[in-house]
Length: 234
Image 1 (cartoon, helix red, strand yellow):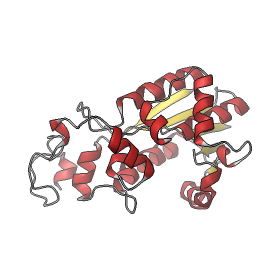
Image 2: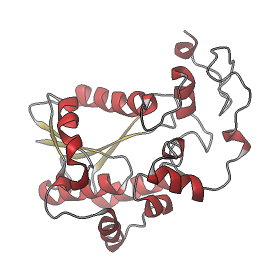
Image 3: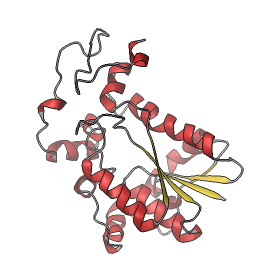
């Protein structure tokens, strides 16, 4: 039996992986992480820097197989392609840079009859579970944090520290995935507001370089300055 944990770098996915590994051992467990930085070397095109530290450190501590998938684009390139910045109502970046690469990896490397997918939602989000299970069909999908013991984010963070792992600072403030870029594009959410209010002042690379964003005429990404790919130009 193969066990694939959708590993976002948040405390929920960490706690989910912990329960799965405690039950099944690390041998047949894969931690699947979608990197939204793509091929960019810019510091403001993907996850918070400490998120990457947390992912690799916890995977090593779990002694589990860590797999990293990527669409190849970063979030700003995806926003430019979609002519839309992710928000609480519509998030094309999450769909294109996370969901699609993860599903492609699943369909390429896993057999639905012998694979269980695990997600990091908890007992406060059980209303989301039917749609998530439907999304991953024909794979079986489980959410261990929706079952006893019912722990909140603060208790999970304490559990993480007790295991000798330092959670990223943004996670401690917001209790969510330590992604400084995607939550910050949703400042109306509690995690986005906290990350936005406490994040360092953005460097010039995060500011628009021209006013052509969304017009289709930009020769470079207005946020990170990278040139569009052939697929973006079509």
